[in-house]
Image: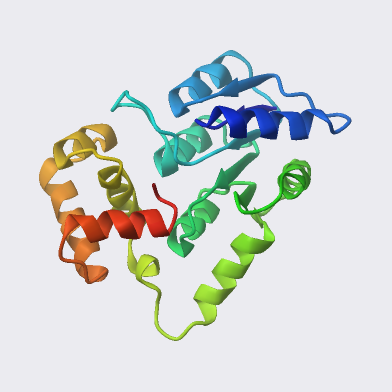
Amino acid sequence: MVIADDHPVVLAAVSDAFAQHIGCEVVATASSGDELVQILQRDLPDLVVTDLVMHSTDQSSVDGLRLISMLRRSYPTLPLVAFTMIASGGMYRELSKLRVAGIVSKEESLTELVQMGLRALSSRRTLMSPKVLQRVVANGHREGEMPERSLSPRELEVVRLFSHGLTVTEIARRLSRAVPTVATQKRSAMRKLNLTNHVDLVKYANDIGLV
């Protein structure tokens, strides 16, 4: 299996947790989406466990939904488990549409992650850890939609990258979109969230784990 996370401590802890389980072998680790893609081009594992938000000094580096979409197109049968701090019902739904094998919150224990990884090897549907499932169920039964639920996946990606310090032009280049399109998506997200300034937008992104 291959594990990807941009935090060395998390990467080491997750690797150790899986390595202690009989039958699990961590053949490689990656600290960025680009590094993960390069590893998979050389050798395809039985399972990939990856963070969604991986910071990089390279503005062209791929992560988030774009990374998952790319991996799903290139390796349609490869089980992917997303291990993330993001607490967005909209993001969870998009990951399910992309047919990831599992979604695990970083608030869960490493034991839960390992169990999810093992189950993901044979599952034909998207598995969700308890905290992720609670979030999805709560969103589905709440009167009215939570703010992030109304944001489209494309708007969530723009908000996430903007909150990481990228300009609209840099986001457009990274996502291969037109600058006016990205600007419109950012304005649309702020309007849906009833936000009037960038400070509050960054705070929102931080609150739901996009940063």
